[in-house]
Length: 399
Image 1 (cartoon, one colour):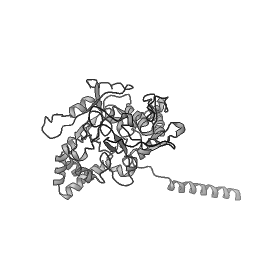
Image 2 (tube, rainbow, N blue to C red):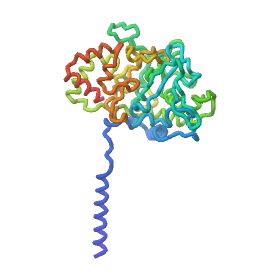
Image 3 (cartoon, rainbow, N blue to C red):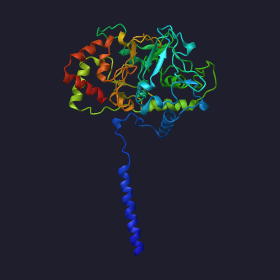
């Protein structure tokens, strides 16, 4: 009887201990408060590839033994994209050497990317005399697979190079040649051997493979079979990252979920959205786009809401750094997606660092920096009263 009482007492204590442990378990973040995680609808094999890409992107840290540098910007992909969010001033990239469509004149001196760190015994790069430069804040990674699947035809339909409708907006694509390892996407539209690029501040990357290969090579100093040239020596060397790892990272970026809007039914948020449209912001920050067919069923033929047109726009002399990429003018910048904007402080130390180089410390400051084609929308924003401006800002923070 005594043994039975001891057994029952022990069992009760064990149950109580288990229940108390549950109280200390971390609660998973709500889907609309996190940028991390896969899109819904991946198959088992696709989920495994997503996880493999997640590990390669966020956990793999390169060293001199695994190919790092010898000059570089970062030691891993995730170090510039904490939680798959925007970068921080400490992770800002510096690009230099190109002023017009004739190309970069400083490739022989390390352009276009400044490798500002180096292994012991090596000297970090310096911006060459006479080279113009611009600082690029690393973007958030989420929802990129949807943007990759917007058709060229839809992008061209949003362009208005001659401002035919006289609304002051004349977005243009960045038409560029493809690197040797890329082929045009199905139904791609070419022009004199050039194709529409869509990723990056100047829309100078064609797709996520292009973006990933460039990041390995230019940011970490890692060669691949796609880009075998070592950025330090200029020599072609063996791949320092396997093709499968590159493909896993690309798949990870393609299948990261799109940001989820928070409190969309809040009356003030809805009113702020109306002011956003009224101010003409949606002329460039297009709310709704759609994807085409894809081998990844979870991404195929979807309607989504990124608030971008993927086009280049004249943003005025205040944002002209004198540097460019591809056929973009120095004062032209690709419309950044606004989805996930309200979550930016999560990866930026609780603050906002907005615009291409992080110079704006708040959403309102970013709006005030809009010039060129966006000046009219900025002026309409300034004509709103305080209550109306606050509603518009609240809407943007809900994205």
